[in-house]
Length: 392
Image (cartoon, rainbow, N blue to C red; front, side):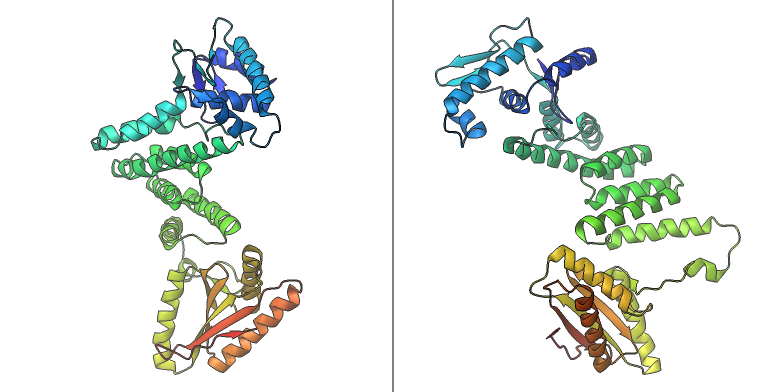
């Protein structure tokens, strides 16, 4: 008996068999399919009545009757799928199991075997075996089954798959197999886009193939999704690859001057949002400038306090900072709901006034928010400046 559990559920050895069986299963209820799938996954052991009742009818007042009815439906489905089969599901004393003469071929078992047995192999064999496992992963385990038992196994096989992808990428990179890297990363990105390795290697492969423009597009897509889903920008590692791709694009232009190479192509009306690494570099440059100019500058950390709705109010605070600070003021995110700002030319008193404007703008714009804002301020002229912890 051949079953495919990765990327959905199908049974049959050939595509024709799978298509015919799929037509039969489309007429079957979801719970009957889940019940059959549970037996398939646990085909190597006896399954007790108590276990089945606990999995499928834990809250029912008459679970024994429901179990008998479900077994009847499942056996009828199996007769339609395998008309030549006899006693496929056998009843023993208070438990059930498959007939002893049945041989199972299940994609997810082969996938797990390849992943686990790859460990400890020489590099070439290791990469080859993991590649076969990755090819088998057509999608999440029983993607249409929302039962708790299926979700638990789904996460296990997804973790195995993502680990296999991360493990094979450095080997492919060393061998300069760029198209294979792109193939692995594209599929893995669809399973879990938040793991940055898949974007890093994808961008590096595109750059190696002379396609920096596509690397920039991949970066932009990743950045948008990270901000939308996690309220987090890409890490410094990805930002550096993006800057490399951008630089390669600029180097491809035939006629340019120095200003067009290093300056932005358009004016921005909002404050400058950047990664924390870039922010540190800007602060270091400002401290050098202050040694010559003598003008003050301040650092300010603005955070959400009690009453905040983490995702919603973080997005609101970021929007207010971008709109109300000057275009030359750099901002970086420290953590969810906490931002650090450099105020050029502002002493600590002026920084407090800036916070007052930010606080007023936030509560005027979002009247129904229960969030409170607090801040800490430090003078850049001192290593350890005055730190105030005030709440708006």
